[in-house]
Image (cartoon, rainbow, N blue to C red; front, side, top):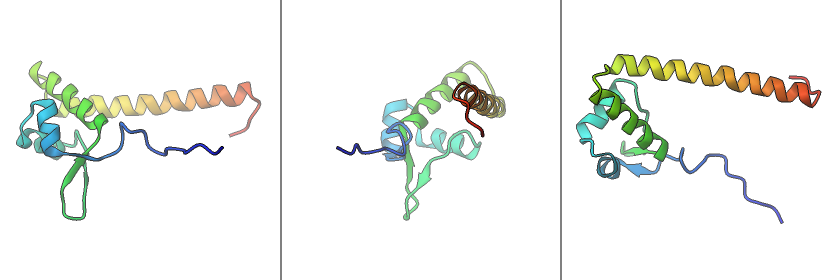
Length: 107
């Protein structure tokens, strides 16, 4: 029996409209668009230009909103996000290296 393989986690699928994001986060459409303009969130666009968000985007928006309430500037948030992404990449490389070494694999 062949199992169906999901390429993208449901959390990453961009299927949620800005109206629903607004309801779930309590943010205004303008704020959500502003965070996109500042490079903090990256919705996909349909052929007609409608923004679509994922559950991961919603979580990120909530984190951004919390940091903004604490007085953190959007430029600082973006820098922190970039550092976290780089750190995660290094961690992934290290884990891959450890697994490869454990199983005597090259690459």
